[in-house]
Image (cartoon, rainbow, N blue to C red):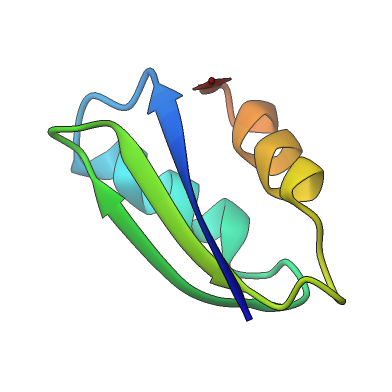
Length: 69
């Protein structure tokens, strides 16, 4: 299992946090999602054989948020 922390801009409230979780949870291999609204960090534990970092980023960006760095 891999863990990655992504810097996400555009999350302003708990509704945004819930939206990001809803987008990521159905992806194959995603195990846990931890979001820090204050820091703008999304930490995802996932199975690298089932999903890629690019898939995580694309899902977040498709919801209207910006993944930076």
